[in-house]
Length: 442
Image 1 (cartoon, rainbow, N blue to C red):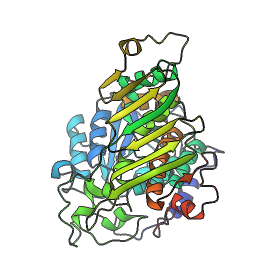
Image 2: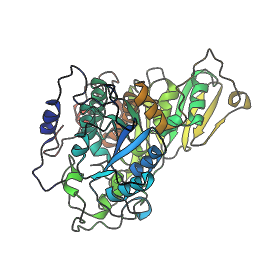
Image 3: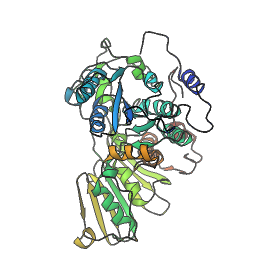
Image 4: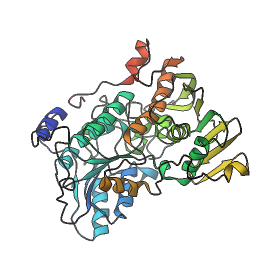
């Protein structure tokens, strides 16, 4: 952030909404909606968060000739702590973009609000730590930007509801980075289940990873040290509680700190439970009970998320969803007449008859996407819904949040997916949201 007084989020939103008075639509309308496209006739994008996933996704968008990446944004100018101890930040990202286009047109920003203030930007990717997803997404939606938002969707269930409501209110195209929905193998097994090939579905098993891998090679660096030059650590903490800086806390390993993420349960909860919901046909609802939750937590000076875990979700239709790090990796659907399983790049079935079954034209065919990035841009242009819309992502990651809450309370929880509350459970309901550090209240 610049060396100037920090304006609050509400002040920023008030300033942005003062620029337009369109009823029930974004306060800043992308040029393409008004029929006055940018001179390049391309979808202009900004990447907010240029660490691991943001930089990887940026390279994917650079391959689409309909897109022009015009800005990158990160609170870290350049530094280590990313995959394999690698270097990332806004300066390396800008260099990659400019090298791709062979010019110097890409602008690097420290403060995302400067990006959202640019009316020539049509869409943004949000690839920041989980605790920043909700405030940034709501601001971007309010600013009229279409959004590719990385998973896990939210830090809390309340955050996810705020995000989904904002996207709907402002008419934003949203794609969640749950790219397994663009994998043929997952779509295939879900269609087999929905079309009755395994008989009556009774159990779904999601095998997620356990542990706290030291992706950034910083886990041992837990001592308090000066904040590196070029890293706006105070804003990185944002709405999360204040904590002294140490290398272990930031970079890719942030996901093992409960103030910023939910550990492996949420890191993978945006993937396999999402496919489970797709195949169960429960994309817009959720379980009614969470039970048999147990696990162990990290024994580390900074990391405190679950390393081993198991919980079960019961649905109104009688199906049980099991989420555990001891289950077979991927998603297994079990029915009265057989089973199907899928993981990234492959799928299996209990019989060749099931595996080779043809889905007829008059049967259920799920949304077909073969490239997650292209699907987003297709929908930005067409204004149609993406393969991974925000409400679906909210319902999927809610399963992971429910699991973490059940682990925290240590008891069976009744859940109302319509009101998104724990009926008559005051203590559990307190865990639906988090307080936010000033001035980042939202």
